[in-house]
Picture (spheres, one colour):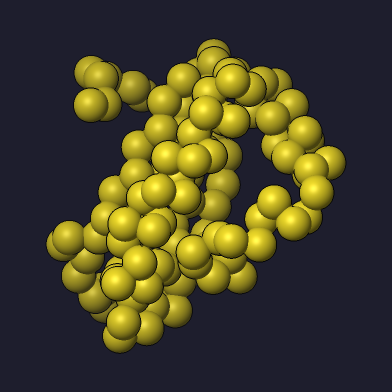
Length: 119
């Protein structure tokens, strides 16, 4: 069954294109490992909430924008194998990430409803 990975991160607003290029660079790796799709959204209408919100979840700073993204996989086993292989990679591969990974929120999800197609 399809499996989803989702994450929310803060990215410096001036680094929008750098971040987009970063995701485009990594997509072939995930696709080769079996990922079916990647959707990356640049925050456009992300209001503050009364209890919690995306802004507080990533400790958003005034010069940053919230990014919301998700990837679909054919199943959890394929996703897990990809991430296991990534953990074995040279840490130097991850030094050019254009965001603060310590403020990333992420998780894997088993879908309970999927309708239509993301484009």
